Image (cartoon, rainbow, N blue to C red; front, side, top):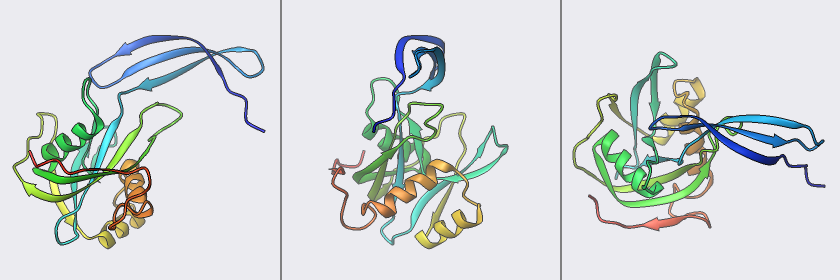
Length: 195
């Protein structure tokens, strides 16, 4: 038997900034009582798993302000208004690592925090990488790391990699078949020239 759904009655924008919109919905709960739900709306995000020719993975180390500590992560960014997930993936890869990709494979998607945001993050595997120079914005500083898949998994096990989105993306990469030669049934391939 399916679970009962909440009925959306209205939607209000409480606050907006360049990155996300804070919304409040009025709802009718399954028992008929009224309620409110507060959440963050975004246009989505894209995370890239960049694979070098020798099989090593590119990651970036950066300081995360809220945690007050460094975090090793795959390149990732929010989808800006008027942009697609694929465009975002390509732009973030260049911005954060300095590499462009001739081959970009979308292997899955996930929601990073489904009680708080409706964001969906698309995960891509990037291959045939070419160094073109990084272009971080003024709020970002990156240290570029190259690690083997085994080293990445060891860092996840020890907690050295603690970013949930990176851990989720790696799970999708390894379980979907996209990290090998084959892609999952929902995957799509882009072979655009490097920019």
